[in-house]
Image 1 (cartoon, rainbow, N blue to C red):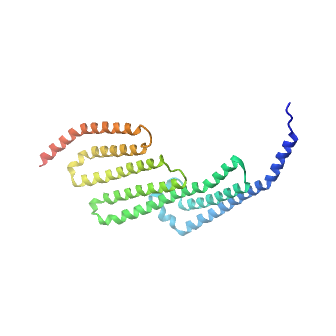
Image 2 (tube, one colour; image 1 turned 180 degrees about the vertical axis):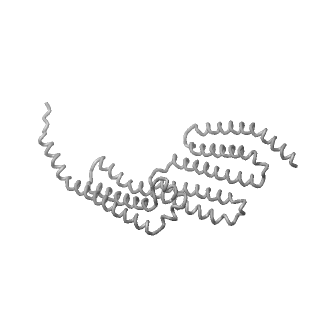
Image 3 (spheres, rainbow, N blue to C red; image 1 turned 60 degrees about the vertical axis):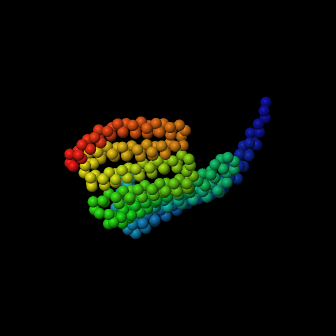
Amino acid sequence: MIDVDLEGILTDFLSDVTSALPAIIAAIIVIIIGYVVGKVLGRAVNKVVEKMGIEKSFDETDTGKAFKSGGMDLSSFIGGVTTAFIIVISIVLAIQILNIGGTIGEFLVQIAAYLPRLLGGIVIIIVGTVLVGFLATLVGNTLKPIFPKEKSEIPDMLKNLLQIGLIAVILMIALDLMLLSGELVYPLILGFVIIGAGIALTDGLIKSITDEHKEFVPVAGYAKFVLYSIFLIIGAGAIFATFEGVTNIIANISWAFAIAMGIMLVPVIYNLAKKMAKEA
C-alpha cells in the first residue's frame, strides 16, 4: 500500500492559498478599480466629444454613415476605446500582481503582453479607416476642378484607388502590430488590392470611353465582364500564391477563360465593325 500524507498535502495547499490570498485580493481590487475608472472616464470622454461638435461633420461621411448603420457613433466609440484601454491596463497589472509561476503563469503573462497589441490593432483599423475616408474625399474633391465635368469619373476613380491603397496600408500596419502578418496575410491583402483597384479602374475607364465614343456602348457590358474576370483571376492568383499547386490551377483556368473570351469576342467585333462601317 502507498502511504499518502493527506494531512500534509492539505496543509501545503492551505498554506499556498493563504500566501497567495493577498495577491488574489489585490488583483481583484485592481481589476474592479480599473473597470470603474474606465467606465467613468469613458463616459466623460464621450460627453466631451459630443460637446466638441466633431460628430456632426463625421456623421456626414461614408464612414460615419457606416457607424450609424452599425448602431455606433464617434463619441461612443472613442469613449469605448478609452474604457477598454483602462481595463486592459488593469488586467495587465492584475496578472503581474498575481505572479503565477509555471506554464500557466507564462501563458497569462503572454496574454497580458498581447492585449495592448490587440486593442491597438483594432483602434488603428477603425481610426485609420476614418482618416482614409477623410483623406480620399479631400483628394477627390481637390481633383474635381482639374478635370472637365464630363470627366467627373476620373477623380472618383483616383479617389477610390487611393482609398483602396491606403486601407491596405492601414491593415498591414494593424496586422503587424497584432503579430498576425506573414506569408498568408500579405498575399491576401495584395489580392484584395488588385481586385478592388481593378474594379475601380474598369468602371472609370469604361465610362470615360463610352461617354466619348457612343459606338462602344453596346459592348461596354461585355468589356466590363472581361476586365472584371481578368482582375478577379489575377487577384485570386495573388491570394493563393503561397498554396502549392493552386497557381497551376489558376493558370489553367486563365488559359481556358482567355480562349473562351476570344471565341465570344469574334461575333462582337464583327457586329461592331459592321456598324462602324455603316456609320462611316
